[in-house]
Amino acid sequence: MVAQRSEYMIRLATIADSKALTRLSLASKAYWKYPKEYFEIWKNELTISQDYIHSNDVFVYEINNSIIGYYSIVNLEKDVEISGISLGKGIWLEHMFIDPQYIGKGIGTKLFSHLREWCIQTKINKVGILADPNAKGFYKKMGCIYMREYPSTIEGRTTPFLKFHVE
Image (cartoon, rainbow, N blue to C red; front, side):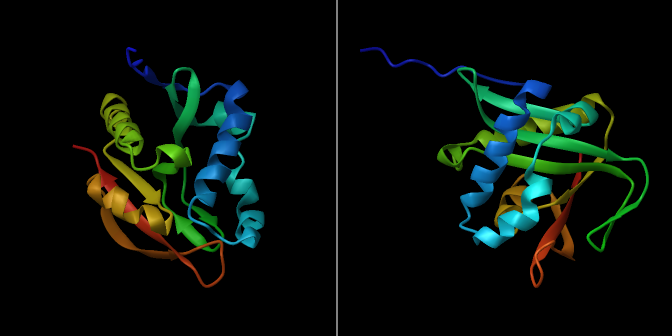
């Protein structure tokens, strides 16, 4: 028996991907065994609507035509305040989620490499990241610089703020 090679690609999301990306966001976040009540608070930020895809750069990672990961970039035209946090004008990595069965298999590294190349092509030299605390080590491994903690949308919890300087 010959082993089949998995074919993968990274492509721009389409509005038809919105429900699959929302399911993936929730499943990936659930991997970390957060309490159910957190998901009520995160419901809106983990919902990837058709408008969100239309308004932002969202890239999906597919293996054999199945979406198993994605990331999204938001361009803040001006400083904004969200949940008591002031986010500076510029490019932000808003989401990067991987299907739980693929976590730790190099998909995040491939997505981050794609992000780096996208930044180079679009002449972006700096990306802000508010990461899940469980992902802080991953982003540091990718070359991001830890800046400080920000208050989370979950009371009593913080979120690491990192910067990625594109080289």
